Image (cartoon, rainbow, N blue to C red; front, side):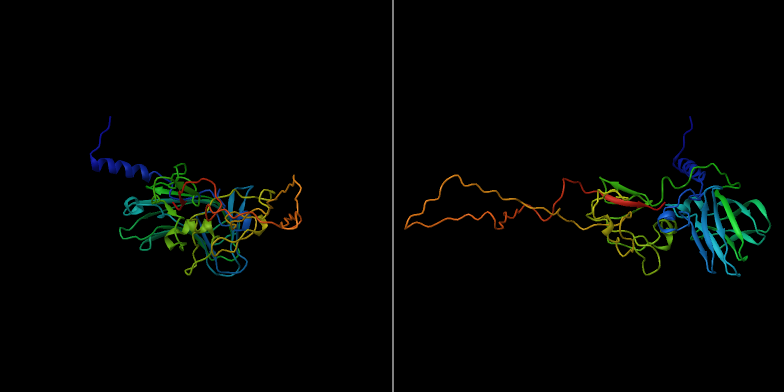
Length: 338
C-alpha cells in the first residue's frame, strides 16, 4: 500500500486534479438561454463579433457550434477562461497546458487558435476547407493572472463549425477526462449548517452585487438575467428571505404568472424562470351568519334591538404576526461558478 508524507500527499492530490478537462462545456451541450432569449452562445463561452451580420448557433443535427463570421475584416473571438476555479494557480502556474480544437471550415480563411496567460501566448493558424484537429500548447508563466483559449478570425463571412474543445495539464490533450467543474455552472444550491458558501459557489443571500471579470463563465450563463452592473457584467440575484416556487410554464396553477415582475434590475417579466411575485392574499369574504330564535319584546320603556342581516359587517383583526407563512427553516442559497 502506498503511503505519503504531507508533501507527497499534496503532490498526488494535485496530480489527480491535473487529470481534468479544463474546458467547461467542451462539446457545447449546455445552452441555458438559447431557446428563451435566442441567446446562441454556449454556456461558459464568450463570443464577440464587432462586424455586422455575424451569428452563432448550435446545429442539433451535426452537434456543432456554428459561427458565421460577419462580412468585412473585423475580428471575431470565441473564447473561454481556463483559470476560473479555486486554487488554479497551484495547478496551472509553470505547467504545460495542451488544448485541442476539433472544427470544420467550409470557406477558406485564416482561423487562429491561441493559448494565452496574459504574458506569454502560443497561436496556431489554419487556412483551408475540411475537417481539422488543432492542438496548441503553452507553458503558463509563473506570474500569470489568467489563462484563456481563444478561437478567432478576421476572414469575411467565414463559417467555423466547432465540434469540441478540450484540454488539460500535460503534453497531450485528452478528450475523455472528467471536467474540472463538478456539476453545472449556474445551478443553485442550498445549505443548512453554514453561512459561508464553498469556494466554487457565491452567496445569493446578500445585497445584489455585480460579477467581476473573474467570473466570465457564470456571466455567460446568467446573461444579465438579473440586471447589468456598471461595468457591463451580470448582477447576482438577491434571494434573502424569499421562498422558491416551481416555474408555472403555462399551467393554470399560478393565476398571476403573466404579471410576474423582473428580478432585481433585470428586464425579464411574465411567466419565466427567476421572475418574482409580491406576497398577496386570495380574495375572499368572511361570511357572518345570524339567527334569531326568540321574539324581541318591546315595551314602552325598553330599547329596541334591530339586527340588519343585509348590511356589511367586519370580523376582528388577528394579531399573530406581520406575514402569512408556512413553517420554515432559513437556508443559505448559493450559485455555482466553477
